[in-house]
Length: 169
Image (cartoon, rainbow, N blue to C red; front, side, top):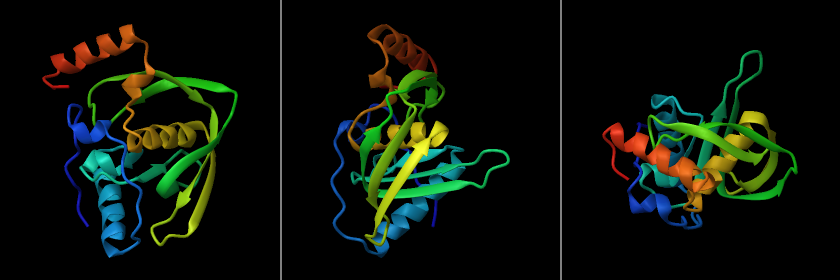
């Protein structure tokens, strides 16, 4: 188990739709462990396999809120199957676009289904921060970044700020 390098904006893997997972083996379980290590090391709440340079549909998340037991999620081949009509607007950032954040509108609650690392079905009903993180990570495996959910003006301003931090896109 070890943290992996996080892929940054500009790498084509972040814009590609990730491939479905078909093998539920030790290699997959090692990837999941490494993804959690990477996420913890970067102090993130979620991570998708393309963010560590692996083009498959795997996401991990862990939400730690005061007074509540931590919620840890691993989804292989995740799919959002239901969203609420209620929209939540909150600040969002991304480990692959460090140093910048912006308010993003997303459904307040979602139901996501997929498989666990052994291939067993998993269904997660989430609200609040977990709903936001799961949507963000499912976007990643679909080649979508949170900046794609911004208005053109907000996206341009955010990318200018990102470039000023010395990054490329």
